[in-house]
Amino acid sequence: MWMAQKGAVKTMQVLLADEFGFCFGVERAVDMVEEALGEGDTVRTLGPLIHNDQEMQRLGTHGVTVISEPVQIKRGETAVIRAHGVTPEVQRELEEKASKVVDATCPFVTRVQKLAARAAAENRHVIVVGNPEHPEMIGVKGYAPDHAFVINDESEVANLPQLNNPLVVSQTTIKLKTFLDTAEAVKGKTDDEVQVVNTICSATRDRQDAARALAGEVEAFYVIGGTHSSNSRKLLAVCKEQCEKSFLIETPLEINPADLKGVEKVGVTAGASTPKWLIDEVVERLKELGKK
Ligand code: SF4
Image (cartoon, rainbow, N blue to C red; front, side):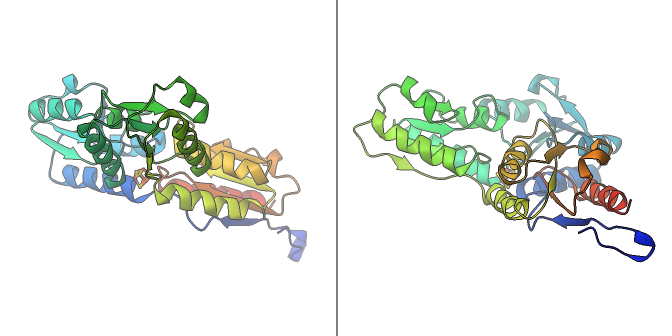
């Protein structure tokens, strides 16, 4: 709140959502990489470990490098599978080439992979609600290549063939409504019972609920996260529903002071890949601006 204080200095309240920042899976992946570095390994991650350029730069200064294909890994090196997971083929290839493989696939993603593999083994169709191009979805499809369809939402259900005993699961970071609407629509594509397993992870839900609760109380909202991070973009969408002046930023340098003119309360949250040190920098910058 802008409060009249000595010398007419006004202070803007900076409010953090109840849940924000690194989720369990990302924290675990970063810890596993730090542990490998501590053992003196030459660490190479298949794709950026997390969707946060600033944290990747920090890890880079500790010797972590990124490869885009398993073929780039060499004997003597440690390959890291990130929290999104990979297909079984990619995992095998890494195990053949690297001296050591650190599998940092988030256990919640492993659960979706296992559900898909089990349904496929029973010759059932698997509908995965998510972005087909997202690495997590590419990995999950690899566990049921001939039985799985990855679709974005209910609008794509019409393109599906007639389904056999379908299982419907979700990308871990999608909106619950998208998942439920799609699962409902799938019922029109089969004569069998549809098994629906909500595999949206609670970290996403908790961050979205906390952001939603705060967005109604503030006049501006900053979501800190990579612009290519799916869960950060979803957080922005949730905030925008109630707070028009909601912004997705990667660093404090992107805060435009003009956006805070007349703002008494500003909300802050962060995507699941955003490190604490970066959140602290943004909060500090907002507090500085709030005094002016
Ligand atoms: S968002 Fe959830 S599923 Fe994804 S890495 Fe984090 S804890 Fe795991």
